[in-house]
Amino acid sequence: MSGELEATGIRCHFWLPNKRRHCANAPLPSSLYCGNHNPSSAPSRVPCPIDPSHTVLQDSLELHIKRCPFKKQADALEAQPYYIKSINSGSDEPLVSSAEKRGLLRKLNTSEFWGLIHKIKSVHSSAVQDLRDSYLVPESCEKWLKGQSDKSLPYQEKHVVQQASILGNMESFGILQNQTNEAAAKTVDSKPEVGIDDLAVVEFGAGRGYLTQMLADCYGVRKVFLVERRSYKLKADRSLRQNESLALERLRIDIEDLNLCGVDSLKGIPYLATGKHLCGPATDLTINCCIRDRKEGEIKIKGIAIATCCHHLCQWKHYKNKRFLSDIGINKEEFHAMTWFSSWAVDGDHSSDNPSIQDGIKPPEISKKNEVGFDQGGIENIIRSIPATERAAFGFMCKEIIDTGRLHWLKENGFDAQLVSYVPPSISPENHLLVAKNQS
Image (cartoon, rainbow, N blue to C red; front, side, top):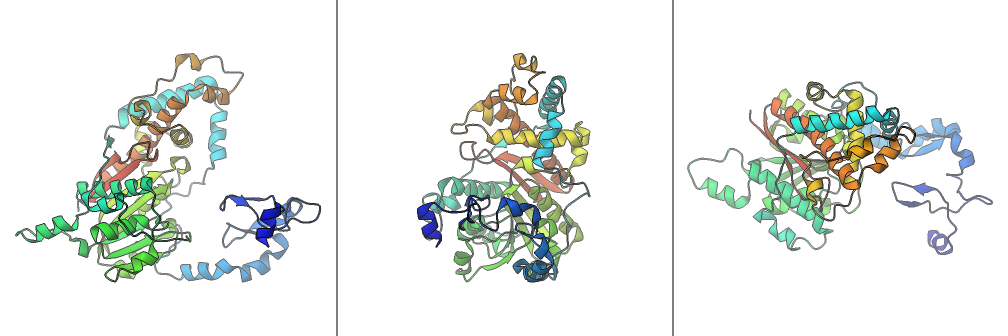
């Protein structure tokens, strides 16, 4: 039926953002929409309290809750010993939407807007000191880079380059050891502190799990945990489970609710925490999860490697180092503005490694001529007047300030840590990597 609708073009006009297509159902007579998405019935539809990703008619809500297919999943999750609602969420601050962040900027006059721009530039020049480029391709990952990995797995070169550099930085920083070096270490009198066979890997925001797949193929890890709240097709799990020497456990849970001390199979095992592109507050939730569990002493974290991204989604509620922001003079409203500005970093053309974009340490030269004459046009005209490359450079500045606060938080909590750009912007403008080694 859906094929016939697609062929004739007669289908519901409602756009499904998660699936990136229009609804495939047939529209009602004399309407552009099907019965589920008819605008006339929209006011009577409400989000399901069990899983807000779908809606239900208000009149059917009570009945739906009893029959909701997600209820059994929710009940099963809440019964798990590692589930504690909002354990990693931080303060009780309300969440602030992107529209609300933009609204805060629209309330500023021209002088206030430029004052905020210059304040953030000044803060960046004084606070961000440790960021450097570290594009690494470890020898262990060469077979992936040459396309010699499992042919049944999806292969995209830019993702493989990112994964390889994450692992290369982990190896270079001393929290991951390739099998050749480990075997050599065992031949001398000094025993390696923790061998790869003794380590578990917990991948946060694992998605399909291909970072873990590369870890297993190239470094021989034996025990892995994949933490992901969503369900994915084409996961690496099938390939990973074919490896008889590897134990795999997938935890379908929001990082906000994860208590690692409740994972029985992880107790007493040192582990590495990894994550590729942990969106917005997921980085803060992960750091909180790992540091809190380390303090409780039941499990031992050896190192962290997190590729951050989507800083525009960051929330004051979750951000781990509010004291750092306070010390550099950034308040809650300015933090929200800074997260909104951070989206400029990914708006530009990153097809080449333009130094003005790549080197976020140098403040962008936003022209003085743009600072006057826009009182009548408002903030939107000011923003449009700033060249794209300058906006991108300023967006990188905001991202670097946010990640520098996270870096300092790790250092203050007993980690030797560094913040690097692990791939060029031409590969991905979301190119920050936090790498940390537990010193206790």
